[in-house]
Amino acid sequence: MDFTFDDEQDLLRTGLTRFLATRYDLEKSRAAAQSGAGWQPEIWRAFAEELGILGAALPEEFGGIGGGPVEMMLICEALGHALVIEPYVDSAVVASGLLRRAGGDVAATLLDEIVSGTTVVTVAAAEPTSGEHWRQVSTVAEREGDGWVLTGTKIVSMSTPLAGHVLVTARMSGAQDDSEGISLFAIDIASSPAGLQMHHYRTIDDRLASDITLARVPAAALLGEEGRAWPSIARARDEGAAAVCAEAVGAMRKVLADTVDYAKQRKQFGQPIGTFQVLQHRMVDMYMEVEQAAAAVYLAILHLDDDDVTRAKAVSAAKATVGRAARFVGQQAVQLHGGMGMTEELAIGHYFKRLTALQFEFGSTDFHIDRYAALTT
Image (cartoon, rainbow, N blue to C red; front, side, top):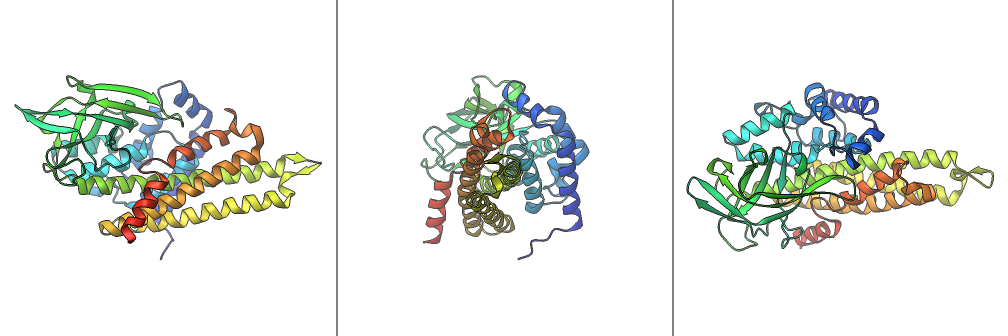
């Protein structure tokens, strides 16, 4: 298995890392997350216009630069290392993947707008009765005149308060758990469709999310073939899971580095706490968890374009491994920093919240352990 990157990939990683180190201020980002707009639009525009990362993982025919899963991984790891709050995974990974595979004029237009940074597109798939199982769709789509009536509610749609469009799943036929009969619709939030209700809120890691009561949409809102959207949705969810795993690895590398630096400076009994062997062992354990997580992410990334079962097994193995590592590394970092580890002034506390939330995005650790077991029996 080849873990080396080519020259273009190295340039992408180096350029993004340098940009984030010099222009992405954590204090300003936290202010925007907690009391401001929830993000920094000027950073989003720079991602598109200066770095081109919003289309880095898309083929050239869709306005991208011809990259793929590896480019996505490099970007997400760098974003996680800098604790970036802008909705790269939600819009440039998950929504873009769905639009690319759906095809059609509406999808092409939205892809162009995503790549150019002029809009954010998100996904709403979870429902109150489905929990983590996106295939359990009870939202119903019915044809009415020249449009569709969508009846149902979506919950915890991440980054939707920042979006211009949201992609929602709805059932046209079949039972609640059937893979057949599920369709995908693009709702133009800015047009304020009659009956559309949105409740916005902040999550534990200071991100924005929405609960959505659906409404009537025009006929053109249907993306792809009627009732045939599930294979694309399943793949998009796995792509999102792999992306947040890479983000978690970046965040854990930063947390580990900060913890080691702190242990060299903090003194107890007249000497740095990093000289205490028991604490050295804990930091070595943190390092091992990070490296195991990184290896699992590499495996998932290299299998994203494989058949459905191979892809799902690799992604679930990575999500379960990263979930365990994120919990351990985050908790150890906070404990080694003492009480100040959870203060607003110290970065560690913010990283800890993000690592906690990442354990549940696109399927929890337990969900992916169960899925992996089901796929291997």
